[in-house]
Image (cartoon, rainbow, N blue to C red; front, side):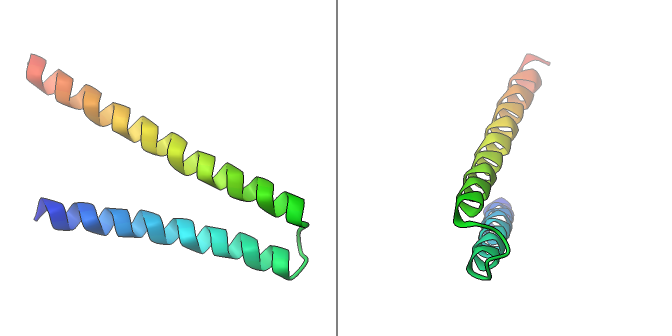
Length: 70
């Protein structure tokens, strides 16, 4: 059950990333934003996902360490 839940969470995260990236690319194709702004937005989106992923990973490690200590 835990593997299924992890796979579902990973699929949701991946899907949200793809949806946001597609929205940025569609906006650039429709010339609502320039190509340079679209590139910056994609880099920022990637940075947000990696940054928050790193923070969540550190939180999980600290939580496991705290559980072992108690």
